[in-house]
Length: 255
Ligand code: 23J
Ligand code: MN
Image (cartoon, rainbow, N blue to C red):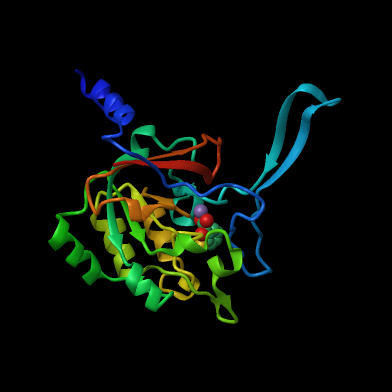
């Protein structure tokens, strides 16, 4: 049998599992809140067009509105000023939406400290245990944060200082973005950067360095606890919004 038909048979038999890493989209899907003087993204809203009624007797459908960066979404390089001349979301090659997953588990560290930042030592230790980060792969940071995904306040975890959520240290972001051939970086949180990243040097290092190096971001992932550290394949499919900076997307993993 061809590799492709073997894969289809393995999915049908369950010997290859398909894990949905996507958060559901609805009015209460968490969105990023920026300081009030800045532009704000829109939450997800459905507007009913008709529902088997006098507006359309046999059909149900909706209009929806939302920001490009709502829920589980894909950050295109042009989302950040460092990548402004690189691909918009419609230009990202479909071959660069699929790759092996490298999963780093920092659940325990984040339970003890929600501001936990992945360090260079964490990356070195992961590579010593699991091998080099895969060329053309997705690095996924497992933190357990998705357990707050149905509670926007707990998910944002903000106080007077701002949000407290985990992410990458600036040093780790620089290494991963500049020295590896990863496709991108995925998190369980509202954005790829840590909650405190506005105050880092550079500000928002994950956005700045990954997107400026033609790499991508994935956010609000779920079910990372169902993935092995290596060996899964991730497929992340944003909508081809012409000139768009990102898109909600369905993310699945083959395990
Ligand atoms: C705009 C400004 C800052 C951030 C973000 C967007 C995101 O997290 C995003 O969804 O790309 S941190
Ligand atoms: Mn985004």
